[in-house]
Image (cartoon, rainbow, N blue to C red; front, side, top):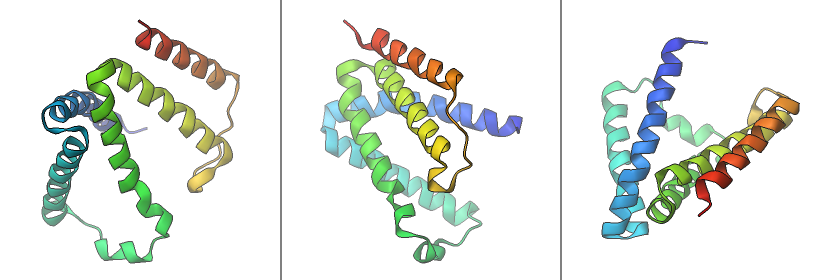
Length: 144
């Protein structure tokens, strides 16, 4: 495992936590859908500029990929919308623990069955115990 990749992903996690708070505040000011739209618009412009100056791929290859691989933008838009909606109501931490629990459980199911072309990694007792801890954490973070 590359330490640099772990550091980059760790910083990405920090960015997600900060983004949730920023987008939640934006949504309170301009509206939920409008806040999600603005977040995606600014992100799209940022990625467009990064692609122009640093991109090494070929965006025209998008016409050759299976159509289901293009759904990522829709899923990302729903994620940003959900966070803009939830963060002002339940807070950054509760929103993120919900996301993390869902991500780990869903990704483990994807790994278990080898869906989406991923390597098959079976769900075992340790992972199930981890799911139980995640659900317990979600309960503790969201109870009144």
